[in-house]
Length: 87
Image 1 (spheres, one colour):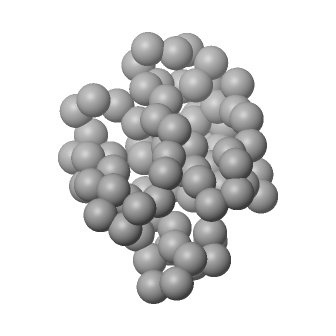
Image 2 (cartoon, rainbow, N blue to C red; image 1 turned 30 degrees about the vertical axis):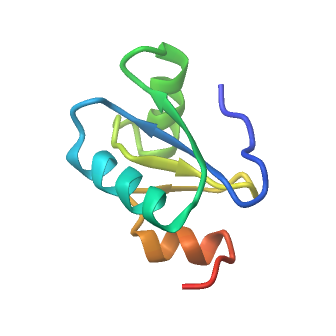
Image 3 (cartoon, rainbow, N blue to C red; image 1 turned 180 degrees about the horizontal axis):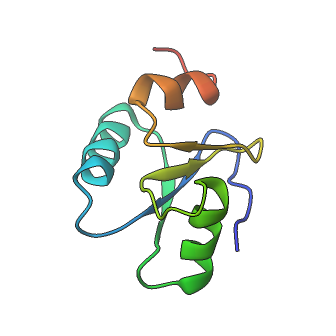
């Protein structure tokens, strides 16, 4: 299911009701980091991917970086650092 995001962007696996997801999306918007959002409640293969990187749990936000690595509930600073964006 997962595809590697373009350089400088991320893919965020989320749900509509996740407060952590909403916060991260707002923060990303403020600093101009583009992202593709995938709702794991609407795409079974997305939920399976999230489970595969979170010990069987559907923990969101799960973020995939251009290098193919993933992080669960990363801070904005972590996203910026992993994208090599100035803080």
